[in-house]
Length: 471
Image 1 (tube, rainbow, N blue to C red):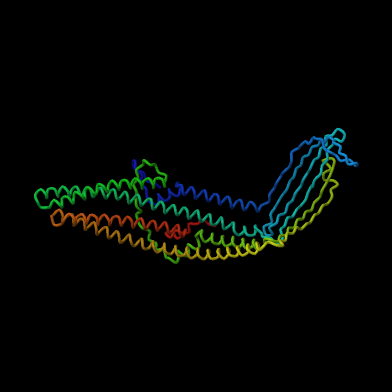
Image 2: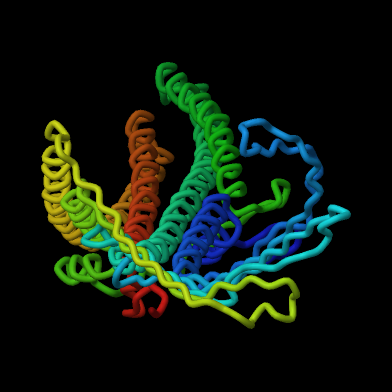
């Protein structure tokens, strides 16, 4: 991944992006967020599986005086010395398509009387039973979660990929920011060397009277300004170096030599195709679909709130015995069925307002979904167009840099021959510097747009493959 020669590190753009995705704080945050979403998904799936529960009460002792009312109305206090323990087992399963739950259970209670006259133990409980709790005509949360939770997990996976690609944009920005500052330091140092040579020539000419003092002073001022620019350039370089090192988790003392990409990728993204891919891959679209389902669930809940009915039914066998080995003998059959109703008579318009609010939220979610689709499509097509334009600007700025360099070489020779003024020489140097800065800026713009298009579409246009994991 990295080439290290001597005491310096050669770092390419691809290596920088890869290391940022592995080591940056943002990458750690993205991975942690994805893990949280994964656990939420596992938690939801676990709620659909049966719950097995064992509970009970450890043997306890109750010794006290207890008042017993007599037939004549008086109260006689008698000593009570008892013990009790219990053990319950249950298997509970939700019914997602109805919103109810069914339970299979078994229970055992033991009662101990430690009184000297009536000492003994007895057992009671339900050897086996089944219970159904079923809301009638009610909002079914499980029905909606079955549709919403997979979208939550799907969106989180795509947001993770998007976050990692955005880290790629950060790495490219920091990489070229450091490169531009590194190149600026080098450029200013070269300008100072050129200025010192020209100043030496100018002093000789001034001594023989071929240039004016004003020209000499102008060249000296230009040299001093270059020295000031060097101090600022070195400060900017140090700051950009700290930013990149912090992002990539690099040794702060290890010198870095940046290696530019050998070539510019040759693919030409088609804006309509970029928009189509973005609509297919973006987490925004999954979130919009989820939000719409949540709004529909809210409207369903609002319509069904107010009146409520619950069906409770159970069946099984009960028993009571003096000895544990008789627990499954002499059992009696038991069945219970009940329906509980709740009907609001006067609610002062609360239910109506709740329904109206839910319907408004549903309409808002529908509008938001359409807006998200429009925004994603437009942004993806614009980014594709900007990448094409950025590639063209590289060629334009490369040509401008070559022309400016050639012009300065000609101006330098003319100045050495006495055919050009100091002001014209300085102007040619400034134009060469601006052309060089423009070229570096064009490179940075292209690679920022390159990684930005990947983050926007979650698609690698260079290989023609989606960046999303297989579902």
